[in-house]
Image 1 (cartoon, rainbow, N blue to C red):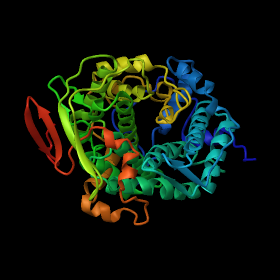
Image 2 (image 1 turned 90 degrees about the vertical axis):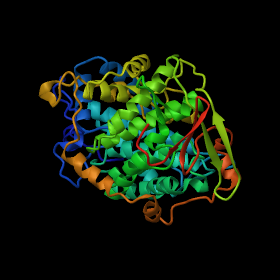
Image 3 (image 1 turned 180 degrees about the vertical axis):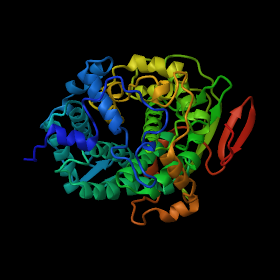
Image 4 (image 1 turned 120 degrees about the vertical axis):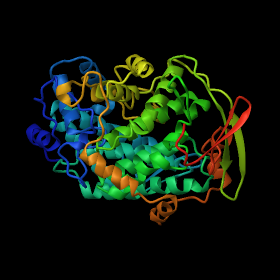
Length: 498
């Protein structure tokens, strides 16, 4: 039986002061800019900071809307119950042709996360103990993540989620922190790093945006959790300058005069486009909490892409520039396909991704985000894993954004104005951005990737099992091939325009 710890000691360690005033104002500068020395990471500092946890606890204690409704969704979820029993596996498999058992992993991760979050809101130690027991069981057992090419999806998605669950209990007296860090780095971070360098032996545009973003999120989360500044710098540099489809200018290739930014996977299907927006939001939020402003990068390009997807998912008409991509294995089978229109949508499809994005832009920054705000209201109160169906897609986001990310609008006394003028990152952001600016280029990044990281050579069958063989994407190496007005437009990688 794990050692029981007092509510007071855990709250002190986490900074989640239940007594925090319910009306706390947030800041429009990245959270880690305050009280963190240059060169140090803020903990907790992935999706949730000390201030965030204190706000949630205070708002729920006060019965404030919409936090109370968000918390009710958490407490109703079967994964959020204390006493959840972990089912750790030595090897996790995801992908066709393998004895798939990855559902055991994602269910346990969501149980750990939900119990840890519930603990920080209520102070009930049984939930913290449950989360720690689940995480310790996996770090003592897991040796590898295997399968088809889908193993990289498992590494990316479950790596960033694992890190977030563990970050919430990293100061618990019974949590095996060093062992978990080693397990996370070996089985998730190394594989995700390898994917961003080698892309499973495929041409750079073979894998859709969400593949890159899942692995980017894992690399960033693992780097922060393990206090690895070089790893964090690689993730941030890839977001800005990466050759793959997850880099921001490849994920959002075209910005239109109306301020909407075309989301690449809108030409694929609705579900994967929503997944990608959720993952990019997750990436931006984790970076923000370490003082790195990617939400505002390239004139808030992410907001333009999120607005595009939100309008499209609400049934609105959106512009679309046709595009073509190469696919296949390096030195192996290859092909190309073109997409000419955004896919159809089902307005009833909901993923718990919008509260975090809407609250950042409208409350932290005071910027208009009409479509994102509307779709966030439609999705509220957001649930989490287990509330959106039994299959893996329902567990791709940690969720509970209504509870976790709803914020009060900025006031002048809180570091900004009601009008929400955008603030620049604080001191920590400056240090972090300096680190990312000094990050190795693509060639040196390849050299810095762990030599032992698993990487298939990209056999045709391995690539085909990802679904990449019959979907559309973009041309590799030189960037985007766009068909607009009957003209072939080439935007080479490295140019700064939209």
